[in-house]
Length: 364
Image (cartoon, rainbow, N blue to C red; front, side, top):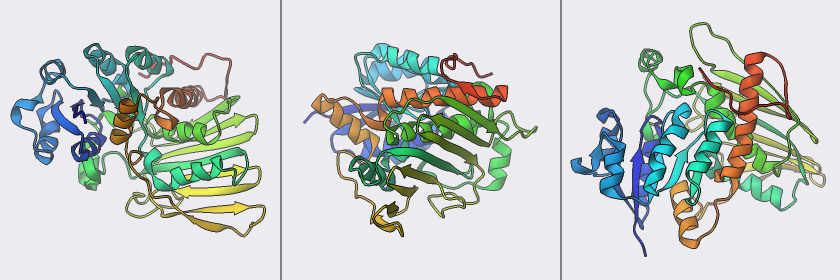
């Protein structure tokens, strides 16, 4: 069995540590190098995964040239996704790109063009949560009929409250770093809308069966002390009705420790029933015409090779199968289209109808 050589390029997003751990634990994968311009950012990964100093690089090109990897895991700032993928693409690697897809639809299309002929997977961590996978299975089995409406509320205390492996920080650290973190800078694609809305619109597209949107209206909070939003609400009108997608940095608790109120996750309304699927919970709740009082369904136990993005992508490559579902460029592109329209709507304070130019909006 081939040993897949993996590198981590650009550590701007704390999820790099999580993704590298998946590679480290994969029996047929080997981390052959990591790279970031700031050596401080690679220090923990080098220690956690026993990466020798001669495999830790400041220059991405040197890392790629010397290690000759098969797969690059990439976690740059949102607004730099396209630039960074275009930098690594000439080295012929498959790409696992941490969410979101991009900061604009134009940039998403640049990423797809740069990786043509190679595998591209856009990792949405919510796609690996057992309750959300279970909800999709129940939808596909016809339990609630065709999905007409999706409600999404998700987020956490904020991106500076935790490091890789969800190691918690503290209020003093958060307040100190807001002024310097790319998450809070418009030019880098910061803000809760660009960080989290793609989760809802991409998985929402998955649940709705790629329904065509008609109109988008979005509002964001306006805190004069910050360049970017920490709270957004987006309404999408489909032929079947309205769906709502809400993003929040500043939940009362993080959902992986204690579910906040409102709960983080999805509610799906179908023609013959409903499903509520909340992050990290061990069951989903279902109502049907036959059982309107509702009942619990135990969340599926995920099995290899569908437990995380690294083993999924390796399996797809080994078997010559396309990337499907939320990680696929096609579904992620539809999600990005909605994010673009929402960003434009919030900025112009008006609804955006499809048929207008919603792609290519620049941030900054």
